[in-house]
Length: 581
Image (cartoon, rainbow, N blue to C red):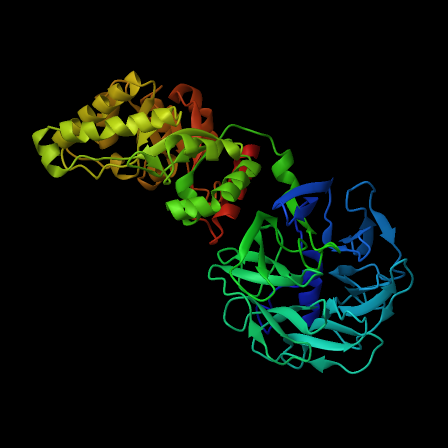
């Protein structure tokens, strides 16, 4: 359904629909028509398009997929052997992505703006012969969005906005026209109504519990029952397989959108449950959302279904550059071994699609990375098209070690750590943090410790560095931690990884320090307050120009937070900024 959450009662209906009609895919986008095979649990791309297509239907005879493009309907062979073939819809040229084929394959129901009133987007339901013709309008008033036609072809089910408060509920009416019947009246949005193949039930999604979930009710609206209980996802548009056994639906991460919103260009999942209910199975994760799976797209044999994934054109065409991303940025998705196991395949692939070429790990513990052996961790990263540039971990000195100068026990901690990084093939190992030190003597002890670690790393063929925050620039006893570390460690043993945002936050110029100790900054952390380049606080042009003299061979992007809860969107915007810099 092409709409967005009504954010305020102040927003007028006409401006609301005008906005939603043009904002579904606000950026140039490539579409990938995909087929998922339920038996083998595999999926493949049928055809790629350098424009937006949406909402595939599979015809009952199995011969065609029907999609929406530019407000019109088109058909294409499921194997991609044909191009897009237009379906004549008369003067209806503003179809949205809510179209349903009748069980006999003779008619297509669709939702569209009234062509007689193109100034106001107020969707109505129409029906048109599959072979094309002038559509006949069914619903007397709008807005309403079609999602289901009963198996006998006599009744349509749709979401309608009705009443003075524009309540959004499931309604039905005869396909030939007649009286509307309201089936739901719970607070909030009820949407996506679709008949089961036997016509006994209507499946829909409802936000009545505070999270969007899949529900089922009798065709007359009785016995409304919750069917999914997803705790971190919002579940939309349930589609029942023709054999009535399975229900596939699209699920949005709760960090991406509000429960009653389903926009484009998001990180989503396709999930499946048995029609009798049960735990959902995640079938595929991809970049999509609005238009990917709005309508039933099961094949007649119930073995496959179609959907659309997307790529932003700019991700594909922006200049490429070598740049790593610190995985601490996506800690909400990958921080624990359980989260990493669940999400790494999709998250790492998305980072690669954004233009990142490598990662900096942040999860080493007791010989493992994110709970994986070094070899398995490396394979997981490489499977996504990335390499491991570097890794953050730390074992700072405690007060006793700083006072005595005896750091043999701490140094022994690094030996298995270095071995694990060597096994993972990681060329750079970075000590990510030390507490603020209180005297020049403590700084000199820490510098000797860093130099000793670096010597061990050099023997193993790994470069060792120290990562700066802001306190390393704080004056203590007439010097700073950074100055002591830079002057009292050997360049062949220790490099400095400056975090440019923390340097700015400390009130110093990153470029001045890069030039003060030339050749010492083999890796840099590129960071801003939120997305890279948005704050205006950090002079990235000058920093990049100073790379050659600073000895910088690579840089790592880190976002500790984004301007929205959607950290992947923030990383995408940061990647595009840097690729164009």
